[in-house]
Length: 395
Image (cartoon, rainbow, N blue to C red; front, side, top):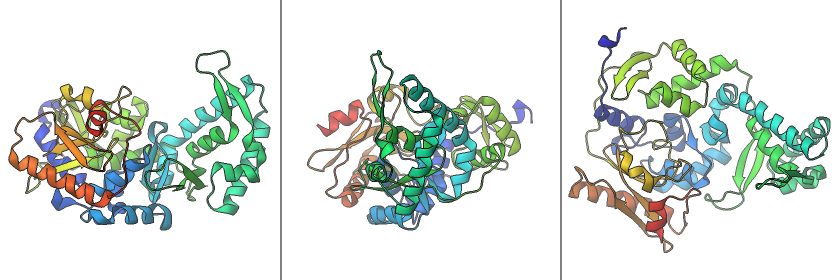
């Protein structure tokens, strides 16, 4: 198809797609955490609270958020928290474990293991054969226990407590414990996953658990499947968006696009892609909608090029210096402000972009703030990566 024949999808239609496919418009809200994760493909899991907050923003009955999310993660095993794209922790539908591991995990895992062995060798620590023995012993202990903390595993396999110097003589030198580095490598390799936290759903201290059994897929086929799923919920997207989200090389992105017969469309940013047959017009939500999304929410972080839903002048207040987004306020597909929780539990918010925002919008945003407060209850939420507006509002 020549460039002149490509259908143009403007920012308004992209926002309409986002509202429905990301379960943000009231009429499209989900009935379960499994539906949320299935629709979004992946929920950011670096900050534990993000998973529950992202689910709660999209459930028809937000009161079920904590119980249903913990059921799906820890009781039924329908969702799994594991390393994925860009060596980042995500929560996926368990059925995607093999796809994520083969499409993105293997290459990252090889680099992580090589880096660990190099660091240990530089410090005069034991060699690769020793590490393999410790790994096999630790995995056997984990299989016996079912779930365990690093300290519990170290009681079964004391060599996990061995320490080695890292970056000696440099400004960032330190001491690493074998358990910390090895469990991270095993996570990237798809051998272990994060289990139930030691504390509440906001806790960042996790037990470890054996990874769900999964077949070893061909990396190219796995990349094709992951891109097909992601583009189905986030398309249209540019090559840059796809390369950024997956962490793949551009040649891998292009191969996967060709494999799914992706359809090229015209965007304000240039050429974008949708899955075959998805280039036609999409009817937007029947009613205006508001949402309060958490830090690192998969919608706010879904694309590298964000001008169609986030004005560039708002970014300094809503992102930290590493590019992590904080809590955001949405109105009809645009980020227009941010929110935070104060020490007394109150949910507060501020508009940074009031263009086209009237009393109806403020009422809807207030309703969402009340909805959020109703299920969060006495739990206190502090984002792991704090942003200027969140710090200011929560003070």
